[in-house]
Length: 216
Image 1 (cartoon, rainbow, N blue to C red):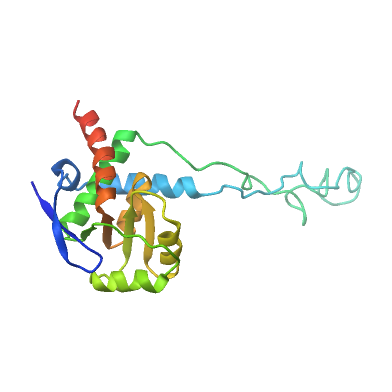
Image 2 (image 1 turned 90 degrees about the vertical axis):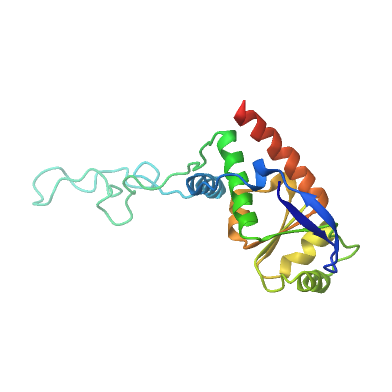
Protein backbone atom coordinates (compact mmCIF):
# COMPACT_ATOMS: atom_id res chain seq x y z
CA UNK A 1 0.00 0.00 0.00
CA UNK A 2 1.40 3.36 -1.02
CA UNK A 3 1.75 6.26 1.38
CA UNK A 4 2.32 10.00 1.25
CA UNK A 5 4.10 12.37 3.59
CA UNK A 6 1.82 14.73 5.46
CA UNK A 7 3.35 18.20 5.59
CA UNK A 8 2.71 21.42 7.40
CA UNK A 9 2.16 24.62 5.43
CA UNK A 10 5.82 25.38 6.20
CA UNK A 11 6.76 22.22 4.23
CA UNK A 12 7.82 20.28 7.32
CA UNK A 13 6.98 16.56 7.33
CA UNK A 14 4.72 15.78 10.28
CA UNK A 15 3.69 12.23 9.49
CA UNK A 16 2.53 9.91 6.75
CA UNK A 17 -0.79 8.83 5.28
CA UNK A 18 -1.58 5.45 3.79
CA UNK A 19 -3.42 5.59 0.49
CA UNK A 20 -6.23 3.28 -0.50
CA UNK A 21 -5.00 1.43 -3.62
CA UNK A 22 -8.57 1.26 -4.92
CA UNK A 23 -8.56 5.07 -5.14
CA UNK A 24 -4.97 6.06 -5.84
CA UNK A 25 -3.70 3.00 -7.70
CA UNK A 26 -6.67 2.34 -9.95
CA UNK A 27 -6.43 1.64 -13.66
CA UNK A 28 -6.01 4.87 -15.63
CA UNK A 29 -8.93 4.99 -18.06
CA UNK A 30 -8.69 7.90 -20.48
CA UNK A 31 -11.95 6.87 -22.10
CA UNK A 32 -13.68 7.53 -18.78
CA UNK A 33 -11.97 10.94 -18.60
CA UNK A 34 -13.49 11.83 -21.95
CA UNK A 35 -16.97 10.64 -21.01
CA UNK A 36 -17.06 12.43 -17.65
CA UNK A 37 -15.50 15.71 -18.82
CA UNK A 38 -17.91 15.76 -21.74
CA UNK A 39 -20.81 15.27 -19.33
CA UNK A 40 -19.60 18.03 -17.01
CA UNK A 41 -19.04 20.58 -19.77
CA UNK A 42 -22.38 19.75 -21.39
CA UNK A 43 -24.17 20.33 -18.08
CA UNK A 44 -22.59 23.78 -17.81
CA UNK A 45 -24.04 24.97 -21.12
CA UNK A 46 -26.95 27.33 -20.55
CA UNK A 47 -28.77 26.40 -23.74
CA UNK A 48 -30.54 29.78 -23.84
CA UNK A 49 -29.82 30.37 -27.52
CA UNK A 50 -32.98 31.22 -29.45
CA UNK A 51 -34.20 32.45 -32.81
CA UNK A 52 -37.55 33.43 -34.31
CA UNK A 53 -39.21 31.25 -36.89
CA UNK A 54 -41.81 32.62 -39.31
CA UNK A 55 -44.50 32.25 -36.67
CA UNK A 56 -42.53 34.34 -34.18
CA UNK A 57 -41.61 37.26 -36.46
CA UNK A 58 -44.04 40.16 -36.24
CA UNK A 59 -45.87 41.46 -39.31
CA UNK A 60 -46.43 39.80 -42.65
CA UNK A 61 -50.03 38.88 -42.09
CA UNK A 62 -51.19 40.07 -45.48
CA UNK A 63 -50.18 38.62 -48.81
CA UNK A 64 -47.59 41.06 -50.28
CA UNK A 65 -49.17 41.09 -53.75
CA UNK A 66 -51.74 39.17 -55.73
CA UNK A 67 -51.13 35.58 -56.67
CA UNK A 68 -51.07 35.94 -60.46
CA UNK A 69 -50.39 38.51 -63.09
CA UNK A 70 -47.40 40.34 -61.60
CA UNK A 71 -44.66 38.37 -63.34
CA UNK A 72 -43.07 37.58 -59.98
CA UNK A 73 -42.88 34.39 -57.97
CA UNK A 74 -45.86 33.65 -55.77
CA UNK A 75 -45.44 34.86 -52.16
CA UNK A 76 -47.71 34.35 -49.19
CA UNK A 77 -45.98 36.54 -46.59
CA UNK A 78 -42.99 38.88 -46.32
CA UNK A 79 -41.95 37.00 -43.17
CA UNK A 80 -41.13 33.81 -45.06
CA UNK A 81 -37.48 32.68 -44.64
CA UNK A 82 -36.37 33.87 -48.08
CA UNK A 83 -37.31 37.48 -47.28
CA UNK A 84 -35.04 39.90 -45.46
CA UNK A 85 -36.37 40.06 -41.91
CA UNK A 86 -38.12 36.75 -42.30
CA UNK A 87 -38.10 33.91 -39.82
CA UNK A 88 -35.23 31.45 -39.45
CA UNK A 89 -35.45 27.91 -40.78
CA UNK A 90 -34.54 25.29 -38.19
CA UNK A 91 -32.85 27.98 -36.08
CA UNK A 92 -31.55 27.36 -32.55
CA UNK A 93 -34.14 27.03 -29.81
CA UNK A 94 -33.68 26.82 -26.03
CA UNK A 95 -32.65 23.33 -24.97
CA UNK A 96 -30.72 21.46 -22.33
CA UNK A 97 -27.44 19.79 -23.29
CA UNK A 98 -27.05 17.75 -20.12
CA UNK A 99 -26.93 13.99 -20.30
CA UNK A 100 -26.57 11.29 -17.70
CA UNK A 101 -23.67 9.00 -16.93
CA UNK A 102 -23.94 6.07 -14.49
CA UNK A 103 -22.70 6.91 -10.99
CA UNK A 104 -20.31 3.96 -11.08
CA UNK A 105 -18.71 5.30 -14.25
CA UNK A 106 -18.37 8.80 -12.77
CA UNK A 107 -16.77 7.43 -9.59
CA UNK A 108 -14.43 5.22 -11.60
CA UNK A 109 -13.37 8.23 -13.67
CA UNK A 110 -12.56 10.21 -10.52
CA UNK A 111 -10.56 7.33 -9.03
CA UNK A 112 -8.70 7.05 -12.31
CA UNK A 113 -7.94 10.80 -12.35
CA UNK A 114 -6.61 10.70 -8.78
CA UNK A 115 -4.51 7.66 -9.65
CA UNK A 116 -3.07 9.54 -12.62
CA UNK A 117 -2.01 12.49 -10.46
CA UNK A 118 -0.57 10.14 -7.84
CA UNK A 119 1.44 8.28 -10.48
CA UNK A 120 2.84 11.66 -11.57
CA UNK A 121 3.80 12.44 -7.93
CA UNK A 122 1.56 15.48 -8.15
CA UNK A 123 -0.39 15.01 -4.90
CA UNK A 124 0.61 16.95 -1.77
CA UNK A 125 -1.10 16.42 1.58
CA UNK A 126 -1.00 19.09 4.31
CA UNK A 127 -2.24 18.92 7.89
CA UNK A 128 -4.45 21.99 7.43
CA UNK A 129 -4.79 24.99 5.17
CA UNK A 130 -6.97 27.79 6.54
CA UNK A 131 -6.85 31.49 7.36
CA UNK A 132 -8.68 33.85 9.69
CA UNK A 133 -8.84 36.73 7.20
CA UNK A 134 -8.63 37.44 3.48
CA UNK A 135 -4.91 37.08 2.62
CA UNK A 136 -4.08 36.36 -1.00
CA UNK A 137 -0.40 37.02 -0.30
CA UNK A 138 -0.44 34.45 2.50
CA UNK A 139 -1.87 31.79 0.16
CA UNK A 140 0.85 32.58 -2.36
CA UNK A 141 3.53 32.30 0.35
CA UNK A 142 2.22 28.88 1.44
CA UNK A 143 2.32 27.62 -2.16
CA UNK A 144 5.86 28.93 -2.53
CA UNK A 145 6.90 27.15 0.67
CA UNK A 146 5.40 23.90 -0.62
CA UNK A 147 7.28 24.37 -3.92
CA UNK A 148 4.01 24.88 -5.79
CA UNK A 149 4.42 28.55 -6.58
CA UNK A 150 3.45 29.43 -10.14
CA UNK A 151 2.01 25.96 -10.74
CA UNK A 152 -1.54 25.05 -11.69
CA UNK A 153 -2.87 23.88 -8.31
CA UNK A 154 -6.21 22.50 -7.17
CA UNK A 155 -6.62 22.96 -3.42
CA UNK A 156 -9.03 20.45 -1.88
CA UNK A 157 -10.53 21.23 1.53
CA UNK A 158 -13.04 19.35 3.66
CA UNK A 159 -15.33 22.19 4.80
CA UNK A 160 -16.37 25.63 3.48
CA UNK A 161 -13.66 28.22 4.15
CA UNK A 162 -14.61 31.62 2.77
CA UNK A 163 -11.27 33.21 3.69
CA UNK A 164 -9.25 30.62 1.77
CA UNK A 165 -11.65 30.35 -1.17
CA UNK A 166 -11.76 34.12 -1.72
CA UNK A 167 -8.05 34.65 -1.00
CA UNK A 168 -7.01 32.10 -3.63
CA UNK A 169 -9.40 33.49 -6.24
CA UNK A 170 -6.94 36.09 -7.56
CA UNK A 171 -4.04 33.66 -8.01
CA UNK A 172 -3.79 32.52 -11.65
CA UNK A 173 -4.03 28.77 -12.06
CA UNK A 174 -5.15 28.18 -8.45
CA UNK A 175 -8.62 26.85 -7.60
CA UNK A 176 -10.22 25.73 -4.35
CA UNK A 177 -12.82 22.97 -4.24
CA UNK A 178 -14.46 21.13 -1.38
CA UNK A 179 -13.90 17.38 -1.13
CA UNK A 180 -17.59 16.65 -1.63
CA UNK A 181 -17.44 18.51 -4.97
CA UNK A 182 -14.15 17.08 -6.22
CA UNK A 183 -14.56 16.21 -9.88
CA UNK A 184 -12.64 14.84 -12.85
CA UNK A 185 -12.59 18.07 -14.87
CA UNK A 186 -10.94 20.10 -12.09
CA UNK A 187 -8.43 17.35 -11.32
CA UNK A 188 -7.36 17.06 -14.95
CA UNK A 189 -7.12 20.79 -15.66
CA UNK A 190 -4.73 21.34 -12.74
CA UNK A 191 -1.26 19.81 -12.74
CA UNK A 192 -0.93 19.62 -8.95
CA UNK A 193 -3.29 18.60 -6.14
CA UNK A 194 -2.93 20.11 -2.68
CA UNK A 195 -5.21 18.24 -0.30
CA UNK A 196 -5.77 18.72 3.42
CA UNK A 197 -5.58 15.65 5.63
CA UNK A 198 -9.24 16.00 6.59
CA UNK A 199 -10.23 16.26 2.92
CA UNK A 200 -8.36 13.03 2.19
CA UNK A 201 -10.58 11.32 4.72
CA UNK A 202 -13.72 12.65 3.02
CA UNK A 203 -12.44 11.58 -0.41
CA UNK A 204 -11.55 8.14 0.91
CA UNK A 205 -15.01 7.67 2.41
CA UNK A 206 -16.78 8.88 -0.70
CA UNK A 207 -14.84 6.80 -3.22
CA UNK A 208 -14.34 3.70 -1.09
CA UNK A 209 -18.11 3.24 -0.93
CA UNK A 210 -18.42 3.55 -4.70
CA UNK A 211 -15.51 1.15 -5.21
CA UNK A 212 -17.18 -1.42 -2.98
CA UNK A 213 -20.48 -1.04 -4.84
CA UNK A 214 -18.79 -1.53 -8.20
CA UNK A 215 -17.09 -4.71 -7.00
CA UNK A 216 -20.27 -6.20 -5.57
